[in-house]
Length: 91
Image (cartoon, rainbow, N blue to C red):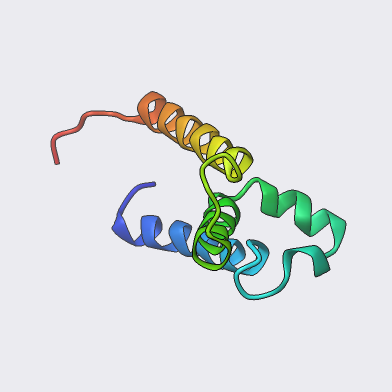
């Protein structure tokens, strides 16, 4: 992005669909299949599952393996993209 305004607009473009497709506002199982596939690629989906499982069910890390590994993979992907796109500039 070129400036802070564009960065804020881009973050909102990511944030709003994340909330709608993560299962935070609507049940994940009740969504259309295409929306579930998109939701699986969003970090918030896995975070919401982990928090719900711990708070409501008392789940352990073994129960949360899939979502924890998915979050780790998404983090590594985001870090890789950030490092490759980083440019040092003096503004």
